[in-house]
Image (cartoon, rainbow, N blue to C red; front, side, top):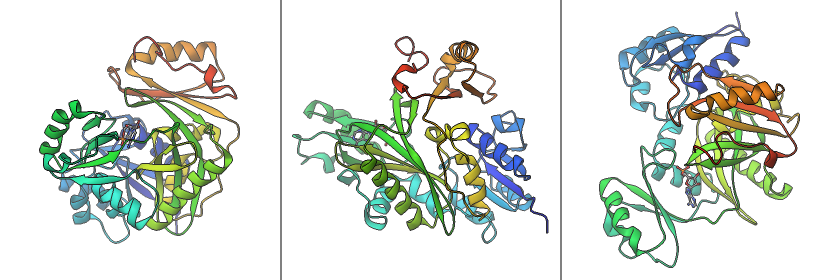
Length: 363
Ligand code: AMP
């Protein structure tokens, strides 16, 4: 039997493109479903150009592929359930449903996986905000549809309540206590349905709620790093994970608090392409095919810088001056402001000396 398979990827952005590249060098064929025929994955795969909720297009993809996966969590889970054959989506649609809705996600994390999350409550209208204790700070987040800080309101005083009430009356929300964290960190973990493998802990620096810089290993104690990895493994095991998952967390002085999960490779794991012996995309492909997973080694401390639309020229200049830095460009045709166009990975023991693109100028 041939080991060459056809994999269908829902979403042809940079994550889908980098998954496809891993799949291709393992000998597989890739078909992508994306609304844009010139999406980043079009450089490396066939594309079915159709909306993500087009059930006929999903069926066409399923009919032509041995295995399906997705590059983002807002995939139509019901549509997928209607077309997939048994075992064709190893990640399953349950994980999609959990990560699409913060209420399900918090319930899963705290009650099923039993990991620490910020104290929270479900908010169905502004009435649920009437008796909150304003000696504490909070973040109110819509249950669905939020990303990169959209659909969120920080509450630090009674003055924030007008906007918070409006948000609470517009959509179901989760009210979380504000965590006074030292660092934001994340851990990539991959599973093959039986076993898991875990990556080093990443330290993440955001600008305007968009990831700007990832430093690996994160500058936390070994004890906290081990704890963060153990939490990621616990979540993966609870899910019988297939493929790659990212667990985003807050590190405080003496604890790790889970913020959210992304059931796919993640921007904060891009450094693994050069800095680890297998990338988060390699283990994703191996995992969804149920193949044995390697232990992950970090070759050297690394830094990843995101290249947004306004940073493209600076990044190109940077690699001319620092030719040992690895520039990845995703092949997006239009360099819009804040659009993720590429990233740069370099090895460095002095992450503070690696300056983010546009820092102090145009974030
Ligand atoms: P999220 O969409 O949940 O990833 O939140 C976006 C950003 O808001 C995070 O990266 C944090 O910087 C911040 N944030 C989210 N939740 C909290 C919280 N409970 N306490 C403090 N900061 C938070």
